[in-house]
Image (cartoon, rainbow, N blue to C red):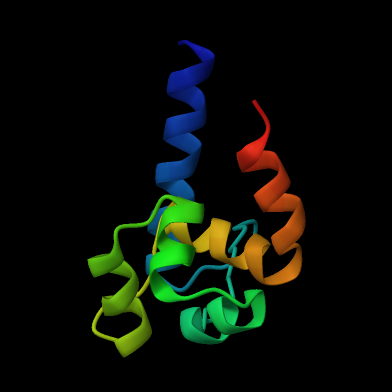
Length: 96
């Protein structure tokens, strides 16, 4: 069996155990809720500036700010990092 298959198999077993309420040995990563509007305002950007700077469509940003949708996956991670270190993220994105 390949290492990739073993890793996937382990993840599936953990997911099944978690779904069944068996949390022993299961690693659960929980991210805090993201208040996108507050993050943007703390950075001091308009919606257009924020969307352009961080590669987010303006429509998606507006949905997040209204609460119609919630950032997921990499977008949520990016927003959590922007909330803590906005200038570092901006420097990294502007580095060429």
